[in-house]
Length: 329
Image (cartoon, rainbow, N blue to C red; front, side, top):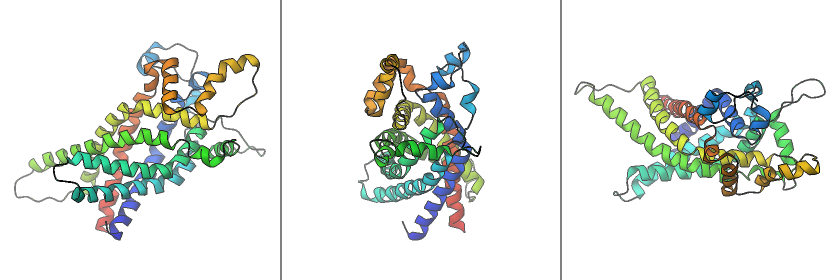
């Protein structure tokens, strides 16, 4: 990939990430709170609503669930822009390299999976610290400073991590494996399916046009086709990987937990909750199944699927439009 093309990919990826973060962030905050271990105590209403519980598998929420929906967004914007650039640069470069390096009998979806996996591992290195800060900030109860102004939840979350006995850097990167374990299968499923769906849509579009007539693809058409393909592939991949997302959320929130003074009776009751601070992903999953059953691993799945359909469509759609537009300039 040439310097000019690499520059375009980095800019296009950053534009796409910034656009999606601003628009989809409230849904991500709600999803994180629903998946958190404290949902029942902090965000769930005591009212019984069989319709909501039957559809989403959770108690109906309190108004607090919908407050401060942009908490922690500062850390995300700071890290997501370079992370998105790293992802798309690695993905496009790897895809181009693998198309010539791999034997011809290797299926194209396989090379797309390899390219997306490598890109995700590189991107997660940049994104993990911000993701840990973000998810802890999303569940903080917002407080005010001495002059009455609201405190930055991102700074509050970072301050909690700084006072960790394990050290701030270890805490910030403790969620890398959980984030990679969620994102790797997601991208490995999404991108081959995305490339396939997009190819088929363009083929159908070309067949419907008169033979011999060459029509350039407009930016709007490119965005719509790419967005639709990404929405279909993203929603399917999101639902399938919801259990890994729930485990990742629990592990990252456990990083920011601070032990509170408790009576001897509370120690026995809450001791199990704090085990997840040092627990592996498999242990956290077992704990969720023990407490909530298999359904607990899919908590927030409907919201995650809708979020991924909208977010992926907007993300890849705006990325492709930005890339094509930059190429024309």
